[in-house]
Image: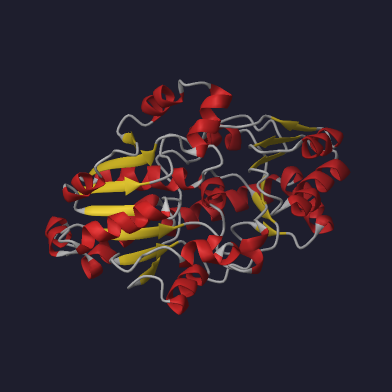
Length: 373
């Protein structure tokens, strides 16, 4: 099967977590014998920011770390109709320009034999509803949404013919336990964002670390000056952007990590964790989470990770994890077990193939393994 991924970027993961999951999905598809090519817009904000910060060699590093993956940039003159005509499956991410989303739909309507899927991994359906409502998804075979509450939004609004829940997951070829001396008490890898969790970062990271006097490191982008000053006042090291491929080594050296969900997910889209939860547990690092409702039963709260309802509980849990080797070991084992059994990119590709067997065109169904089709 030839798969075409329309993504904001596969090469750059600067403030672009969807690249993590798509890389893992693409690698698993390739390992099963499928061909995968990604298309990303020329001048996209993620890649532009990363090149400005890290230099133009990022494409070389990407090719070094992910030699099996291919991603090409398209410009205004690119022939999208010709590209999709050669594909069996076309997966279009929701950051794709609305005019192109509609254009690809028309290509499907005008005799395209490929299967066309729309992929949503963001909260814009609730935070910027009009931006999703205005998309023309009428010619898409199905929508893949990364949580059931988001799927329900699509179904109730009538966006798309069919809607399936397709959670993100860990690329366990990359995210796995690694042997290293534990040198840092707490590491948090996350971006500041648009004020969606500023108070939460203070309450569930900065204040507990400061109160306990723990050693801590933060990696991420888009931190304003006042945020950097607050981190410095708590003696938290700030390392800036980190390539996702380097994250497992950082987790390996940490005694714990935290999960601080963005407010739109907690308030309007319960049940959807960020991909960092999957990746951290896959690396076997003990996790303490700020409150979120695991409405779909993805994990075992209290077993796979600890939940802190406020600053005091976060301080209590972090102190316990960094000082109690038995507790830390139990969390590492339980979290990794849940990922291994349920939440790898291999699992998600199997789910995708099952969805294609149900909604795929004759062309794509003919390309599926017999055990699926």
